[in-house]
Image (cartoon, rainbow, N blue to C red):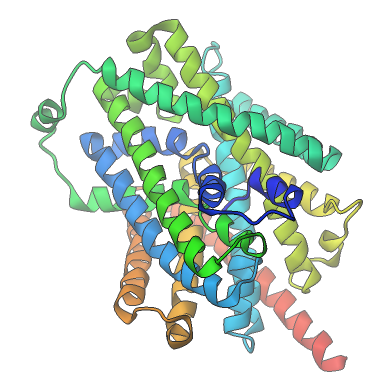
Length: 443
């Protein structure tokens, strides 16, 4: 659910309706960020050769989530997307609207932290201090600061930088995939024979965790006022983009498990592709992988700071965040940008890559579940299939349960950390919802 360079394109093309190819590019720019670099090492460490299957299943969960976003997007035609959909569907429940707003924004903050952490892991992977956790966290904070400054500096300058990063990263990702597959030293049947420990539960857990790598498809809905025939183009663009993202992720995952020994991927899960690329592809290949990771995560950081800060300002304007966050200077939400950056850095300091990844995935699963529930409640108005909507609710709920179960049996201390974050978010959402209700009753 992050935002990217295409928001700038939208503002520059007010007089031109966006067609399906442009909308697909918007969604892909939002989805194909640093996700594959983040989840690959963790996935292989958990389920080995079944990683591509789990990544594809994660895409299927994303497609289920997209169904309700599409139906609500076509019905409401509101560029506010998630927050606006829930607020309009349940106008008498200010706490729920406030909670969705808080979850959405802190989901963005989690992805910002996730991509910054991954950027830092790859950026220092060639140095002797690559395993130093605090240096990695400081570098992550530094890259957030860089893109925070750029966002505060110039919207136009930000758009030009994004153009370069996004299109370059797509070329590099394709090149990495082709080279890895061609250099593969084993086959899938051989890997299946070597790995006899099939775990359906493990596959479902990893599929749920990888959901965060697909968030971003709803960017198409943010462009609803700039497109022609939303009822046709929104579903075409979103489903096509999800299919393409699945293909890109699966091909990269296949290339990695065929060309890089599992022990190398697992040992260096935070920068798995770079760690294994030197032996397989040589120094130039390692450099290419690192460049791809840095561009992908930089693009994701940049776009998330831009778009999510503006959504934070909108929610603050409605009274569910401090009023200061709604203020803008030259149309730039300065205080929202600074707040997002500081919160992301605080999350990096407090958590690990795994806990940030799992918090982000759970948050987006929960938000998507609430969208599916909203669509279920007005399915007769949105023209939604009862069975598909119910399947989406079951799939998203199951994904959330899988992650919590995994945390409970493997790292309960992380579950306590995540639970504490949700408790803080719930308290904040309740306080602002109550304050908003009091102000409305007095006016």
